[in-house]
Length: 339
Image (tube, rainbow, N blue to C red; front, side, top):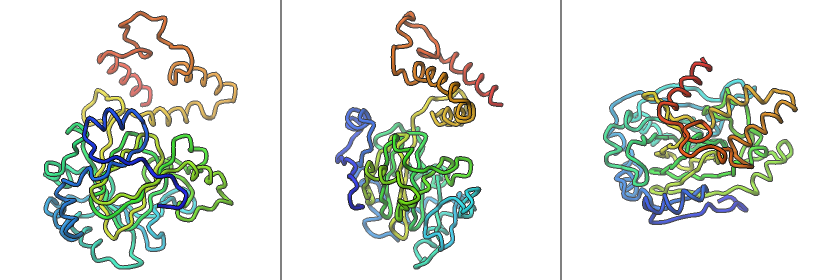
């Protein structure tokens, strides 16, 4: 753990009741030690990284997976390009088995290699049946992240996240949402992972260029996870992730948001509203922005009077609760307007 950073609160022997009744209501990060110790891949990892890698390969059907490659010069720091109009790595597709073998043989000064956000059920059919998440509904589908030593800059997820380390070791450094102004975030459209990331190098912060980052560090929390450990990261907490071993594998689960009436569509996230608001409100005059802030405070953040207090009970509306038919109609309206 970095000197001076607060530890993330830890829990042990977490079951679904503990998670839902004790951890979730806090809306705070939580390390859940040993949550996945019973998974076969974690037990294989206790034998050796080679045994765990062979176990992973036993599920591989050869499907090409989204993979990023960085030169040794980036030292594992996947980031923007120098001019902020792109990224400092290449995007390709690779076989899981081939990449497992590569990662186990690479030496020092190796290129940075990472499989990112691979749908486990598509990449490793049958893996989930043997390595099931005990805290979430079975329909919540996991994703796989695998690579060598790397640093992912502080970013946020658009949904709640449980991440389980199953191979290697990872250090998570988390920042509360209100630290956004101290993180010096970069552009959105060319962000390496789809959401803006901090411009500050966590391992070598330049506090002359980014002086407010010192305040972010003062509010940060940190923990290092071993195989079998898991972490709950509520949205939109910022988090940096450093992979420390020659081969690291993480399985994560995103869930939450508002379901949409369309097949194979991820739930709506407040991040969609943020993007739309940045396009429609952020460039208004100060007086106009202040006017819309009053609307958002009253109807969205509800910082004052209850906007439904004067309405009859049972009324279905945006300001109360939508019926399924209304939800579909509103979703279609938004879709039509955005198109």
